[in-house]
Amino acid sequence: MALFRPNQPPQVFWVLKDSQKNEPQNHNDFILTFEGVTSKEYTGLQVTKDPGVWIVWIGCALMIVGFIVSFFFSHQRVWIRIPKGSGQEVILAGSTNKNKVGFEKTFGSLVEGVQKKPNPLPGPGPD
View 1 (spheres, rainbow, N blue to C red):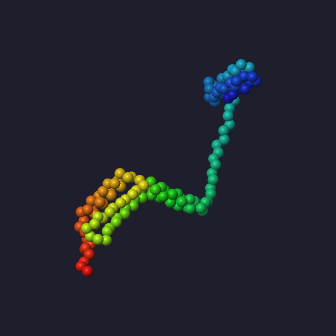
View 2: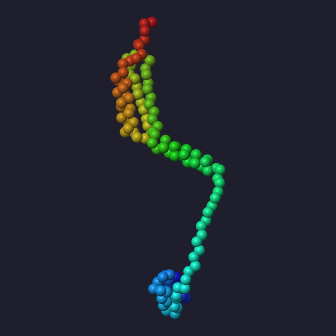
View 3: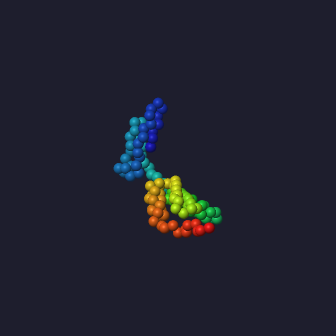
């Protein structure tokens, strides 16, 4: 409870239900006693049918799939330039937007694989 008096700060105190067998509490000009409380139990139930809820769940699932693709997969590009004549260099290039260290390892293994392969294309024949 709070006791408000003019030109004074409010006095806050507790009045408890089973406090020492309803002993009166003395607050200056007032004597307060707890007489009782009446309680009512109630509940609120709501029954609805929402036919559009599946659209929301499908949208949430698509959003989560989009987050997974966006955060856990990186966009990687690899370019290979193969010269027309034999005996020339094959040029490899690549770029990524995320996980550059991991891409460097993958790209390095790709370069090593290309270097180990023999030239499968026959050279230009006699004309």
